[in-house]
Amino acid sequence: MVFVLGGCQIYAQLTDLARLEYSFIPSSRSEDQYTRLRAILNYPIKIKNENYVIVGAEYNRIILNLEEPYPFDTGVLDRLHVIDLNLGYTFETRGDWRLGFQFNPRIASTLTRGITANDIFFNGGIYAIKDRTKSADGSKPNRLILGLTYNTTVGVPFPLPFISYYRKINDKWSYSAGIPKSNLKYFFSDKAILQGFALLDGYFANLQQPITVNGKTAENISLSVAVAGLGFEYLLTKHLVAYTYSGFTFRLDNVLRNNNRDEIFRLDNLNAFYLRTGIKFKI
Image (tube, rainbow, N blue to C red; front, side, top):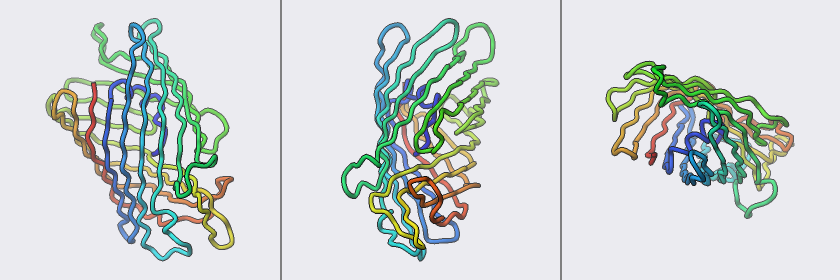
């Protein structure tokens, strides 16, 4: 999904060891539906002091139920697979700063004919993280992440800047501002958290069986979603968290593209209800 979350992801890899997640976007005025099943497993290996090597993997199975009358065989798009290998290294520097490096080989494809060279993509990034969430100097807990990310699925041949800022206002409120996700959290208790959020989500995948539409050939499919809504998290135990996010998309682009990433055909792009729920194990 799947956008690379940059510094947020490498930070989460230190805390989120496992995650199972279900996402659902039903189109409000058509028969089309989007479903995603997601599984994440991370294992941070402590080298010395607070230096870690992080090894992990992520699997996304995307199910497209396209029931509208399209001018091509939609069966080719029934199942998409996005498989990431997560390799990271993070270490402390002077003061409150931590540096992190991340490399993400990815397979993103319909995988109807095994794995081919066109199914493989490479993503990565470098990040500087100033973490003062446990500072003892009396300042409000905060975290700043600055970085550069490279994602071959974006189609931009150079690194892109990344910035994210988290701050805890008091015992009841905190916020996080950045891309791909921003939120405002309210803590009912140590176990129950309500949040308002806005985020970007999506994927880019190779079609092993190209689709011909109106005389043009599509070799790839992409989805980009911008959504806002409310979320609720509940700590079942000290390390086990159940969560649900629901909202409405205010931008939804599902597009067939050629190998130059030019738009060939636009699928149903009506804004719709959004649901994401799951359970995660964190430290």
